[in-house]
Amino acid sequence: MLQTEKHYVQWHDQDTPQQTRWLSESKQPPPAKIVLVDDQTTADHAYRLACEGNSLVWRGDFHNARQLLQAMTRRIERTAQRRASKAAKSNKPAAEAKQMPNLFHQQRHSQAQRASILSRLLLQLDAGYVSRLRRAPELSAACTAAFGELDEPCLISLRDVQGALGAAQWRAKGVAIADLDLSIYPHYGVFAPTRHEYVQLLLQAPLPPVHDVAFDIGTGTGLLAIILAQRGVPQIIATDLNPRALTCAQDNLQRLGLTTVQLQSADLFPLASPPANLIVCNPPWLPAKPSSPLEYAVYDANSAMLRGFLQGVSQHLAPQGEVWLILSDLAEHLQLRSREQLLGWIADAGLLVKYRLDTPAKHGRSQDETDPLFAARSAEVTSLWCLQVTE
Ligand SMILES: C[S@@+](CC[C@H](N)C(=O)[O-])C[C@H]1O[C@@H](n2cnc3c(N)ncnc32)[C@H](O)[C@@H]1O
Image (cartoon, rainbow, N blue to C red; front, side, top):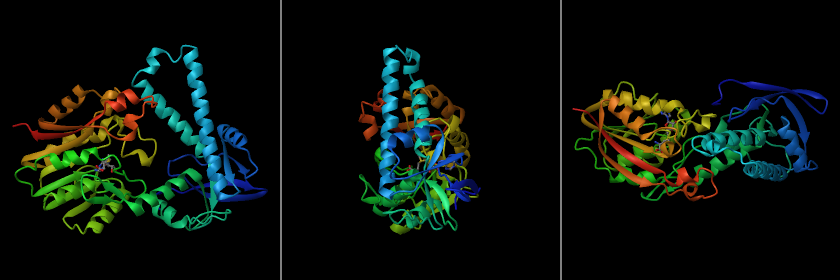
């Protein structure tokens, strides 16, 4: 089980006292008040109960639970729209609140609220993630792959279960990487390279003349290490802090029969390794606090990983070695970080920019004009910064 600390919930099922294991991948607190709901419960009533802080244990048909979750989602969206138009009529939010980075913080806040309300619709599962609900699908394989073995009953949100079922599908069918004749198989909780504009950059960048050893820092599914191996780098060491990422990368390497990539659990750089001629890193790109383990691939509080990477990288680089930093500039458009700050960190680390390759964002969210962050998202450019140690 990836959750190290076990939490239990004391509650009453009808009149029978229960103590049940609590599982929450998104780190929602154990339920304080539990109400039983079923096919007779209306969406309005369920939504109200959840907004009042109750957790709802579902006792009806499994498919109806899914529909209820969708109905609750629509109610959250309607409430948000009503609030927005009311605020617009009363000339609020003030101009300042409509600006970056406030819009970004507001959006994250409403996403957190939405997650907390929707995560209150719970399933009670037996050991092995078995559901006794009518028309329940087989959950065991997907949930075991996502959350680990479970030898006791649990309460878990339907949302987390849906996340596990969705991840199992990705893992089975894979993500085709358009520029390569390659599919990558993401695991639950690992950054899925569904936006892979940056792959082009990694293919275009000329390898340094000597490229015996490369590091891939924060390897996720292993994609960048795999590309380097396919480009002919004979020895690659790939690190990640997330155990799921290391298992996932191992799976992808095995599927491809690649034996030249060695995986290491490490905070940034590998331990006891030779210096590298090439060090690549695609760090989480938004400087904000991750609110759950699933967000660690996207959010980097205070740009700690980015700054740690830049500060430490020259100690691991062979003479004439290159650093390829892959970084979206979305944080700059959201005014969470400035270009000057980034250039300052590069210079302070004793590095200079040898060249930069750019690619505009092409993913769906960058084209969605209804997104409050559209101005920032549509301007996003991802770059490969080729850095070298200043002579
Ligand atoms: C944006 S994802 C990139 C994944 C992969 N390299 C790719 O391009 O598809 C960032 C990765 O960095 C990892 N990570 C975050 N902080 C780290 C750290 N301090 N040391 C090692 N890996 C870290 C995350 O677990 C995640 O897998």
